[in-house]
Length: 112
Image (tube, rainbow, N blue to C red):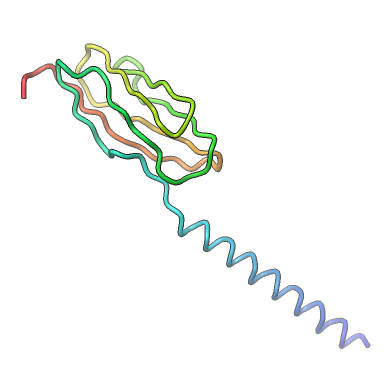
């Protein structure tokens, strides 16, 4: 009888382990990116629009340097508004699973 119980427990443990691995591999196969991956804003360009592709809502948007620009969003789409300063900024989105994706904004005041 003990042998049957042990075999049953081993089968249950193996089934749970396979199920956990299968779910974990599904998570790894998903992608989460920001499109477009970069934007160039010149003196006549004040905004850029980005969107999160993939991931899990809700989305939280931020920038690496608030002196260069800001973001406004309540969804998977964000509007970046630049300041008059020149530099490189990172637009970052964090999804409901704490995954992060980024885009780069190049700001210049020269004519192309």
